[in-house]
Length: 186
Image (cartoon, rainbow, N blue to C red):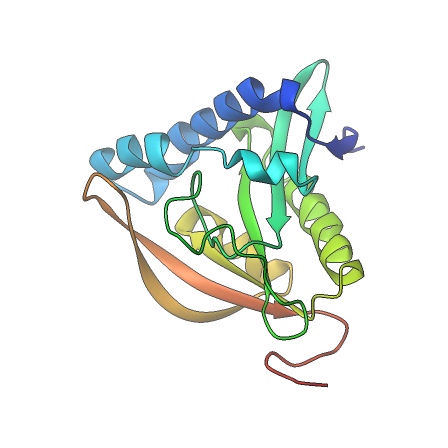
């Protein structure tokens, strides 16, 4: 049985930050070298508080501890951390642009139990209800299999350039919602 899922609130932010960092430190070494893991623990595991404030970020909690988190966004930012580019806060057009799946992290001892998939399902339903026809994300390598299993298709391999000059391999992925092909003007 999955622990309950709920929307994240401001009081969760310190616990979310700790969960994100721990998840990177525990799961990324199977895919990246030590320098990449250390950089990702700083830059990939940086919560964009707008996700919490927008009400589009979710957590699973077990015995008072957060064990999984993730969300979606109607803003133009695709991945990692607080807004850094001028267009990051721009609201997307649901009819022509994909909503973003963002900041999915699971505590190592809770992986492969369906928590991330449950969050993706919640995000998919919420984005669809908001009128979005598709979803987009930038997957780090540990998440690619999860996103494939959740119906996302790989668009292309990508390089995620972190602010300290470290680069991570990633994969740009998309998924349609409600039977609309990506780019369909309907």
